[in-house]
Length: 329
Image (cartoon, rainbow, N blue to C red; front, top):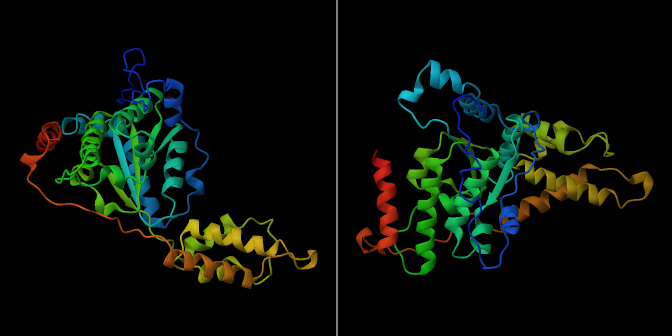
C-alpha cells in the first residue's frame, strides 16, 4: 500500500456486513456477496487503443507516485483526503472495462471485490444502503479493489419525484454511496455503458473518467491474435489482417462470440475439413451483428415527475441536505 494511505483496523471496524433480508440470514452468506477474488487478468493482456492505455497509466501514476505527489509536492495541502482513488470506465459493452479493473487490481497486487448493483438491489430488497456500506467496509478490511459494474444504476441522478417506496430507496442508496465514497481510503473502480446517467456529485468525486472505445484496426488484429488460439486449425486465408478488416465496429466481447460460433461450426466437420474457413467467420459475424442490432436496448426507461425538493419525505431530504452541504465545502 502506498505511503500515506490508511487501512482501517479490523479491531475497531464495525461489522463488515450488516444487511439481512431475513432475520436468520447468516453472516457467512452475507460475506459471500462481497468475497474478494484473486484477479486473473494482467495489464499486459489488456488490448485497448493507445489513448485508453495512456489514460490508465496516468491514473495509475496517482497510486505509483503517491508519496512524491502528496508529501514532496505537497498535494495534501489542497487534497487532505487524497488517499482515495476512484476511476470510472465507460463505453460500449465488451470493450474491456471489467478486464481492465481486474488488470489494475492484479498490477497493484490486490484482490478485487466485484459488485453488481442490480443484483444487490434485487436480492436485498429494502436493504440496499446497508449492502453498499457493507461492500465498502469489506474492501477496507481486506485492502481489495472495489469494482462496481453497471454503475449507472447507483451513480445515476438522484430523483426529485418520490412516488413510491422504491423511489425513496433509490435516493437513500445514492446518498449513502456518496458518503461512503467520501470516507473510503482505497481504490474503487466503476464501469458503465450509460455514463450520461451519472449524477454530477459522483462525477466530481471520481479522479479519472476513461472511455473504452471500440477497437481500431491495430487493436482488432491484436484481439484476434489473443482470442483465436494458435491451436485452432484454420485456412491459410484466415489471417489476423483479414479478420481485423472484417470485424470493424465489433468489440472484444463480440469477437469472442464470433470465435465461439465459428469454431463450433468447424469442429463438427469430418476430420479432413475440420478447420475454420472464412465462411465460418463471416456467418458468425452476421449472427453477432444481427444480435447487437435487433436484440436488447441500451436506452434506460425513466419515469419521473419533477416536484420541489421541499416536498420530499423528511428522511430523504435530510440525506440530500447532508450530501449537498458536503458538495459546497
